Image 1 (tube, rainbow, N blue to C red):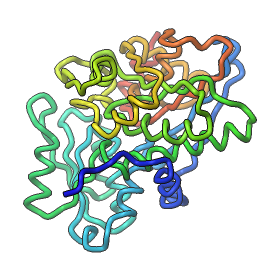
Image 2 (image 1 turned 60 degrees about the vertical axis):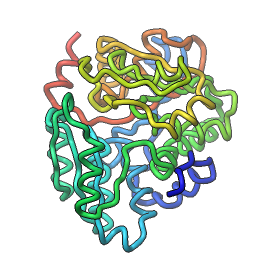
Image 3 (image 1 turned 90 degrees about the horizontal axis):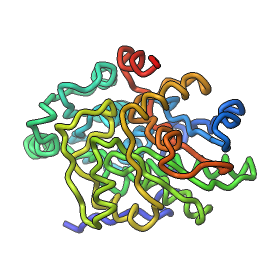
Length: 327
């Protein structure tokens, strides 16, 4: 089997053609009042408004669109804490493909219910003791299904990069260049794809991956030059970013294109969720708000700069969201 290679920016453009008309072209939002308060120009890519509530639909749609008829007949299997699960379920449903998804038992209820609503079969496992990838590989072997990885696949990365192409188009329409781009990072599919897209047009932009302090595998991988494993026993409210280690393809891109990797506390994230709700009127899940949290907490300098923040998803249970809104 030929080893997979990181996608090129040309593959991101090809993905944009595949997903056009299927994914929502989400807006780049701005609040003058928030800009005044923060002393910088902030532009927010609003992926909570995406169909299925997160950017993950982009990669899943690109992956399913590239499947052969024989592969579609065999069905698809994926493993995810929730957002990729919903995305694969929705993309498979639209294409008439059978889907089975491996999800942790403690996934937010809204993500479990939405995945089932799209017609997928869910197989649950214990996040602390189970190996979701191994479970999915066992299902693929037993049932002949095609595995759709959550991040470390060129079609997935290229699909996520379409969010970056939309950002570029909107920035050009505003005749503004970004100084800083901040994106959430679990396995690295989103930030690596977006980096490919944005660096093509804005090579001087400083792109930062952001992850929770309790799941700092990308930060440690960035610092050491070798893939590091996360300690999944450390609690965080950012469930969507709890991955065991970053992808090899995603890291290959990120080592080359990123300016750095920042980590944020759950307290930082709660403040970002509150401000996004107050000024943008958006429901953002904790993992989707880490880029904004990093900017708010001074993880990189933003004064008088143009800062693009990817708000990657809005799939959060009401109880968790209410908790974040409390000062």
